[in-house]
Amino acid sequence: MRDDVVGNSETKTLEKRGLHFAYFIIGWDFFECLIAITAGVIAGSIALTGFGTDSAIEVFAASVVVWHLRGAKEERIKPALKLIALSFFALAAYIAIQASIDLITKDRPDPSIVGIWLNAVALAVMIPVAIIQRRTGKKLGNKVIVAQSSETWLSNYLSISLLVGLGLNAVFSWWWADPVVALLLAGVAIYEGREAWEEANE
Image (cartoon, rainbow, N blue to C red; front, side, top):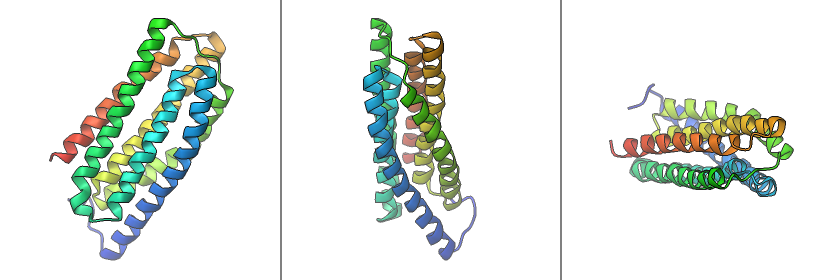
């Protein structure tokens, strides 16, 4: 059921807005992915590389929204939600494995000024996108858009946590802050994935 009853004209407007934001996220996160993974590899930062991987997964999730909105919407709700849930699980698995390896081997990432600036810019751009995206999905009663907005918020949380982790490493040389932050975010990803999966089975 929708939270608000909207007319056909407003529904089309909201769906078009959701589609435009999905396209924007695809373009932005593709660019973000290239920079984050490159900077992460150079700095040896699993959290930063994980952020780039998250961006790639978010490209996939936004593509699912495009697939959903451009097709038979009702028929594609459940498979779309399950695809988004799987993207959360994939992200969680990647981050958890790599972060655990870094903690065991005590791998010390180099401070990454590029990573710090990238995450600051990402927050400035994507927080408004996440807010509008969630409001659009809620007003439409569209679970797929709402689930994808959760992935956008997770990316924002990842940016905030990365700024903390990279900052602590740069200022205090606390190498362990990076993988610990990554593990916390893996837990968030699992929670969000389970939420999306349960929504698909309702």
